[in-house]
Image 1: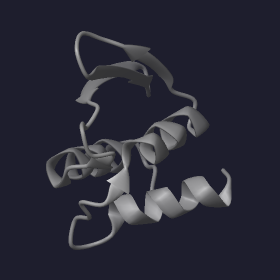
Image 2: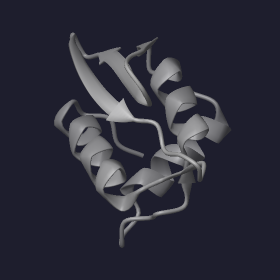
Image 3: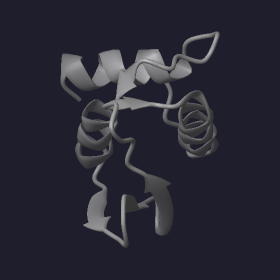
Image 4: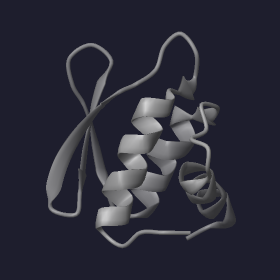
Length: 84
């Protein structure tokens, strides 16, 4: 994992939950972990990782991911042993 992805992972697991993590950085982290990203309807993005598909909403117009989505991503990664 590159330093850039590790920095994103640290941001996802930081407390309190950050609301300033760029969605593009989270997508890049997913890809680095081996995920397949697929476009869905509207702003939805399908992420196939850990043998399952999770659907997230790509933020707009701001590039920053909201706190609820960050908390959901943190929980999902933690459940599969991915930690900084």
